View 1 (cartoon, rainbow over the protein chains, first blue to last red):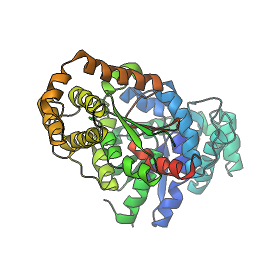
View 2: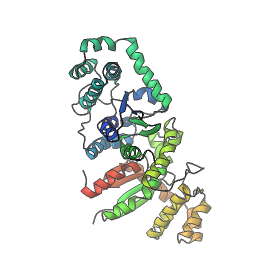
View 3: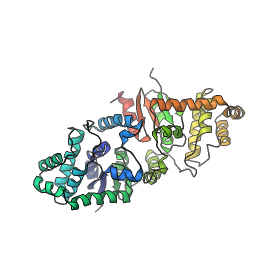
View 4: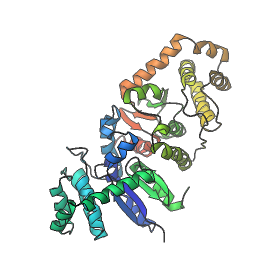
Length: 200
Length: 200
């Protein structure tokens, strides 16, 4: 059986959100599973010297327009969050803790974080909101609240960020299919062709 | 009649080359013309603080792979030039001089520069090669050689670079359709939908 497709992302990344709404269905059409891996672009940008998109002169204004247009192009609801970008420590840490216990629950939670941020304009980086969304997805909120403060949970996210850098990630979303990396929601057509043909 | 689509590019940009092989046909399908405008990304990157792609840690290695894969995806021949990137002063200056005299000839010349660089691995930034390609496209080589050294021809390119920055360009290719900007060869599907629908 083929290895799962790896989907590395940051919850604050608009193009990651767009990818999150498309990748699972595309993979399923080709009998493939997807492994979701939230990381923090802030840690990665320290290595690459990159900046958050909206901070880059000229490119920032274009990007704000492109987020909305790309969402319309893909038929995905999108509202630019008022607080943007956010350091997504709490939901990313929560994701791995949830995933180790119930991976289907973790997937529901991850969708709720993305949609809470990019549709409902919520401050999903606030630990109280993270816990509320996890509870709504079926998690034990008290256990999660206790876990979020532990060194083990903090270290787990740090390890995933380190692994993403070691693997070559420099931006999000970053999708790896059988060793082939694809950066950006705009690589969805290439991902589809790759899955159809086994590589081109 | 609709305004021409504006296609801003740098002759050293792989994704500009990919766009150059697709945009005219796509526009023609929708009864639109394209105005080609070579500029120098070096001048633009001074404003944005950007770096040539291959110089960026991690992103550089990915990009080298993505140039080739994107060309295969689009069915366009591509060979990574040995000397890359190049400062495309001579062919860009030549383009505007040719365009003011014969725009069809200038278009043939521009294709020859892109293909000379990205297929035949030639040093198309060398003024002697620029003149050779222009002659093959039908230009008077002696007149062009004399023109390339004039302040007027140098100033013309500088004005086009300044205009591209004033217009908001931060990378290449940069396509503007009725005021709507599209950055990157990967926006071809959005450009197609925009032309089909008149905006979405």
